[in-house]
Amino acid sequence: MQISKLPRSIRQLTTHAIAIFMGVMLSVTSLQVLPSQAEPAPDSVVSQKLSPAVAAVGSSSFVTAAVNRVGPAVVRIDTERTITRRVEPMMEDPFLRRFFGDSFPQQSPTEQLRGLGSGFILDKSGLILTNAHVVDQADKVTVRLKDGRTFEGTVKGIDEVTDLAVVKINAGSDLPVAPLGSSNNVQVGDWAIAVGNPLGFDNTVTLGIVSTLKRSSAQVGISDKRLDFIQTDAAINPGNSGGPLLNGEGEVIGINTAIRADAMGIGFAIPIDKAKAIALQLQRDGKVAHPYLGVQMITLTPQLAKTNNSDPNSMFEIPEVKGVLVMRVVPNSPAANAGIRRGDVIVQIDGKPITNAEQLQGVVEDSNLGQLLQVKVQRGNQTQLLSVRTAELKDIS
Image (cartoon, rainbow, N blue to C red; front, side, top):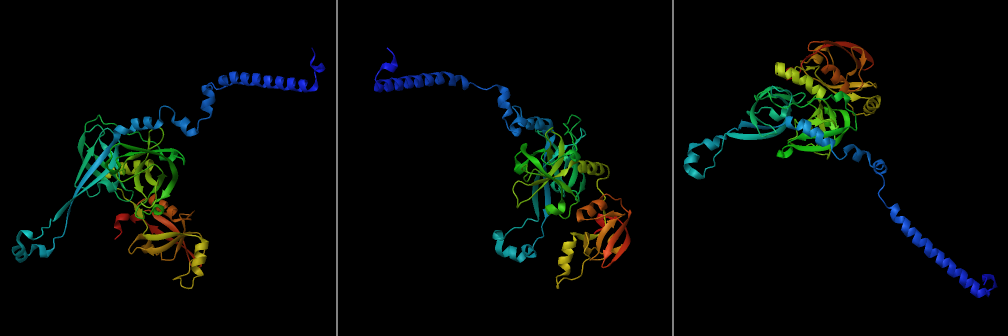
């Protein structure tokens, strides 16, 4: 019997039944196919979807490899210092002591101060590099290796200007040595691994990146230092000072030095290339001679000078040029002897343009003691060329 010969109502019912049947069959077929589509994708497909950070770390962390390479050479440095306090005369009065007896307060004339820092071994002879502020004025220095051995340390040299010091221990010739990299090859965004003993927690490792390079000590707020720091967001805390900052290959690229108490996640390290040069001088001479001119200065721009000159209360008029403004001249300094005055703007040294205070500081630091520098200054509407002979920084009174 043909469907076309059936009544219209029956034909419609038959058509709907066939449609429902076909829909059920298609659903069953889909259910049979879907499980096979849920099977795991090939490894190559999954790996393409990993973030760069996860791909970089992998199943075997590069941090682990870096720390294993350097860790044995990282040391803990404990210091002791005895200070003498002034005794109040009243405390020594025999009458008061006889009157009050045992209840009279006793005052100890000395006090023991203890410090904690980090460092790392430079060579098998037992030379250790650390920060100057870790061992400065210490009466006793104790160095503890990662394997638990302890040795008395001797401070071979301290340079407060760069906050670096060299300590020597006598521990034979089997000491682990930290591999040194080059800070000149460091780029912003590189991995930064800090190793040390923060807050007394030995062998602590933190990970971050290099945030920026050549951050001057003046910008950091350490005006008495001459340094361009590596800035990192790797956690650096008290006790990390003197410990190494590593790159991803486990090479030392800096010495952890400073933190900003008013900013979370910002730390600073001395570039290792600078530290290597200072360490050699400290090992040989026990000190480092730094040349200086004897001026306090700020970077000057034409806009800043114009703002000053438009102020009716300003103390003097400043040349509207780019350079370094002399705010103060140290008495009996090389600058004072050469005739540099407050309000002068240094625009050139030995024919090279000077545009900021950090640049001027670097030129002086790289000069030799007693070297004659030709300093071009703008004084009012006049330009003068002055000869300044550098002297040693310790001569500052």
